[in-house]
Image (cartoon, rainbow, N blue to C red; front, side):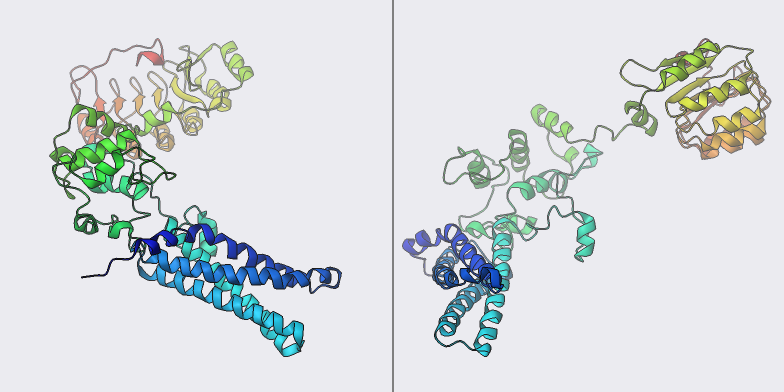
Length: 484
């Protein structure tokens, strides 16, 4: 049976985190003053180095002893502990040796002793930095210093790109694996820094399913199917100032919703491979789960585009368009996307030139009944944010449709009453967001329409009454884009 560590050892070990800052301060200051005092103008500071070095060496020895006592609690394991422990011992030995060499130099100065003294002092500072780094890693995690390092600096340091350990954005709740997508990110955020391979508080590790099932010195972390009897849940529900509350006081605390999700997972059997749809979901849990889903997950590219905003168009440009007989208005009072409509029989190509200055805001455009030609479509092809375009009863041909393939967000296109044919609509096969195409009274055949629908799943090509590929014939309305 393993011998239990005496309480008095554990009591004094708890003072290690408090004491460790003392030698860090003294030894760092001693080294800096030693370096600076070697310049003639600062030489009067050198006599204080010995006293500061003595305090640093003495406190380093005491801190190392307290650290050894703290390690007996069993909460720290692995290579990080060994490196921290021996580098700390190295600091103690080197600082003591540096003080001895300092005393020797005072009694009998020599060049050789001075070189040795400087080498020991430099080594002491290096060991101090190593001990401090690995001590911080034991307390806060191995990536404590580099967790928020920008990728540009990580590349310079030869480190891999930063991992995003924040809760995953769920795009499909039904396909989400409860442990991997919901539970593990919570445990990683609040528990894994103290319960991992390097730091095993209570001999408990919580960073893998296997370790979670294994439990710690007090038994299993949870009882599958019974959250009330699960130690992990019990400790999280204790008052924050309670000695056994987890996460400890002063650490980032778990939210009520996150705790509720853990309780739900445990009560549902604490499985590691089941999806959300395979578990019973109470109403309160369902509402919490829905907050984890990316709000844009089920939106189309066009919906995402139009839900964003743009800078407003120049008021002078809008007024100029209005004077030309063009109706221009925002889609709503909240955003600056514009819809525009030209009156029938107007010179479409010249009007299009006026839209160039609002091309960043223009998303709905109705030029039905104007004299737009293929030359005008060349300019429209640069209006990259167009989502709806009405070109019915214009002079466009197959050749002009080639310019429209540069409109990535185009969702609706009306080209009824034009000279467009099957050959022309082939140019539209790259428009992945195209959902509606109106081609009645054109030379487009049912065969050509079916071919385009096959190339663009989700597209509905409307050939008009009696010739629809999909039997839905919209009303022919030229009164404005808002009525599409």
